[in-house]
Image (cartoon, rainbow, N blue to C red; front, side, top):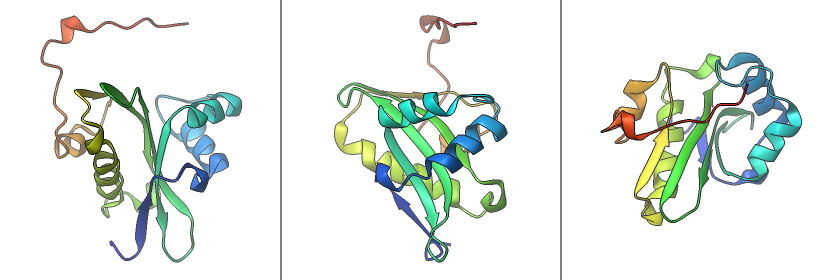
Length: 139
């Protein structure tokens, strides 16, 4: 697996059209997200991906919103359906964690409906006191 795919944190490599299609059409959290909004999110975040070594095609994406000192939010994690189950998600998460580790962040959060097992392998757990967290949601 490792020789077939590679990880990168270079934002210029991101296939913005593909990432927008994945998130706006195939994710459960960003369906209908406009391309301009996605591009602005990419521009304001740390971006990560995994690519096929042979074809150069991007096969996974994640982004992190952070102040670079105390806090980060991992979001928009997506692995192409055709490569799920072969370790691409683990390669993506290993790369993200390795990139963030030197920052010494006190807290990194994420939200997931279906990938708890993956994230637990990288130190994520349920919120210690969920009632301390709140959200302001827009319609």
